[in-house]
Image (cartoon, rainbow, N blue to C red; front, side, top):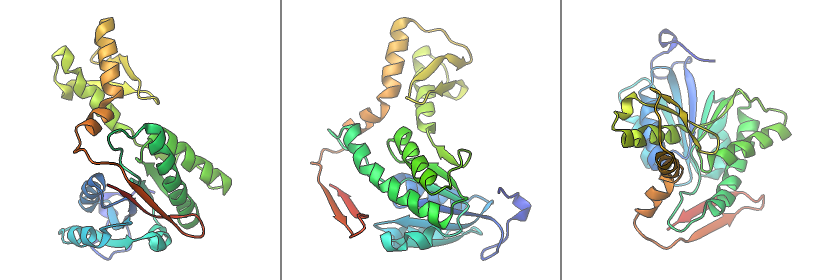
Length: 250
């Protein structure tokens, strides 16, 4: 499945890793697109989103690398975007806004992830799937159930990306007066920091443990709280098949 540097060819070549980014025009999606364009193991990069896909694709395509990039704007091109991909990264979904509960966010994003997972099961059932869409602990389970129903589920090919929680846990170790680059803190499936397994080994008072646990678990909430305040307005347009066509967050 994975390719060595020597096996990758110049633009237009046949060999290399074919990567699809679903939700490519968001803040994380654009950054990730740039990183994929610079990866020597990637030969083809597909960018999919419901808005701004042509502009992001054009911009990314100007990079002087050997990766061929193609844009797929809109629901009607989802299957074309997914066909024959080796790796699919799912970023699509609604961003959390001030006063938006995690439950409300989940109800919206679970519909999106379910639709995308069905497309993956149909068009590239052997692809590795990396899920980043919030709430990742729950959206991974939804993707797994979709693939189980069609008989394509492989636990080794479905991954939830929770690196952000680990990064926060490492950074917040500043309470100990240590360099975050020297800290290795694990994070459990419920964003529970496993402080007892810190590397290098550290000891915490009960107050420090409570403080760090609360700060790590609510790191995302703190980011949302300092976002520009705007009222939340969600407008969903559905096709006859019940597929979300557009979701606007204002």
